[in-house]
Amino acid sequence: MHFHDLRHTYKTWLIEDNVPDVLQHRQMGHKYKGISGIYSHVTRPMIDAMLAGMQTRWEQFGSDIWDDHYPDPHVVKIACSHTAPTDQKRPVDDDRQQAV
Image 1 (cartoon, rainbow, N blue to C red):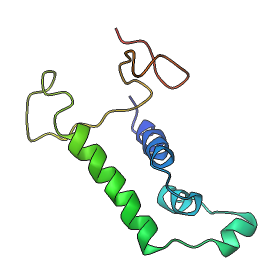
Image 2: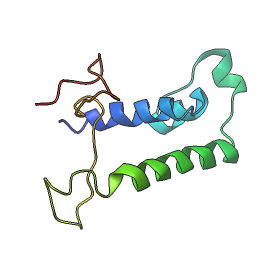
Image 3: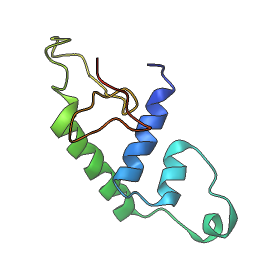
Image 4: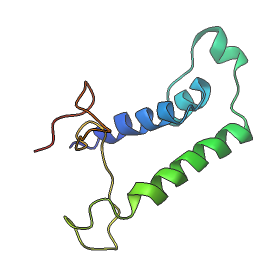
């Protein structure tokens, strides 16, 4: 996994959490071009909803996803959707590789 892969994972999470495009662009450091870029603005409720989604991900997966592989509890573990193991709930597709 490369450091840049984290940007892809983060963008995917923003999409999955239904974060508005204007906030996605801002979070990724991109300009939101065209009419939408002129008339769309980020609001506090958008930011709060985005943070709630990230908090939920952290509570569900972030702190113990790979305890058996890297048992140090002080290390933050991050999973990338492109290399996440697959199973019946998360089949192999364009974004996931077959688990080995």
